[in-house]
Length: 437
Image 1 (spheres, helix red, strand yellow):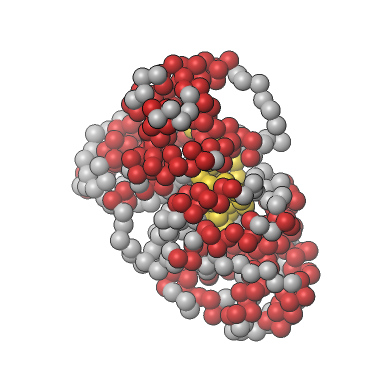
Image 2 (cartoon, rainbow, N blue to C red):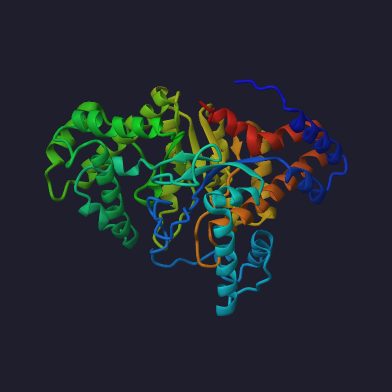
């Protein structure tokens, strides 16, 4: 889909190209900051304090991990965010008085902005559109500023999940959440229990759920499956899946090996259906939260057989969070015509200096396959989705400035080409990947 260049964007490109001749990251950052961005991945929160639909698997009740510096209460970027977003001066770590001041500033702006508040948050970071990873959308979090990415993991686990819950404390916490979400999907499909046959489960639950979400505005389906199992998807036949489903649907403890094969079949089925409907498949592909996350199991190279499956070549896959620590492996997978990656969470977790190195390698090889993202998330009382969005946005744009500066200085790209790449990362690639209706 081709689009004429808007005069404002043309002016920005010209200014960007002119500024690049100075070849300093600080100057580039000022220009890149003017580009309205499409945020490929975030978790905006409704004004309702009871809102829990910002994630199918909220991470706030997990056993503790060793937090990165960016997630700690003394993160030096937090005062910058509080000043920029709320116009208050508060130091870290927060004192009780500082927390009261922060909460009062937030409440005042929420009251002032009303239902416009979520869009106001985007305005603070020059984010034009945010892809909202949510179970449901809601008042204020709606098109055109927010586009929906719901969750498909619950559809992968239709059997009794007691045996899967025994793996780690995290999974003991998460699988009941998936059971509750699947029950919501069943109710929306007019059912009270899982169908007796796989054919009926696909026809009456899986496909209708995806179609209903697509009709409701969903542009992609999100999988958090790396929190629940590894990426080693095999390719069982339909007959094999039928056999396992029929033998296991009423079993209190399905055989774990058989259950995995059924999950593998269902994942490929859902991915194919997403391709048919024109929705992308988003995959959490980074070391995750909690002390029991299987980092090795989230190696994106395990997904290569899926990307090489001709039946799935019409499905676009997005590796969220850049695949860290497998950043080079994730970059290599961009060779696949239907694979993309985004910067979300990396922009929040790592410094611009660290991120710029990985980003430069990706942009030097597959510049049209990289997407900007924040993963704005309500992480703590000190860092809500508002602060997380602002910090990640700032880090991401700064890293992009540093990467492009180096590429221009090393004569790898012209200033004009660098301008095009910046727009691709921040806006244009996403606008093509998720066309408006």
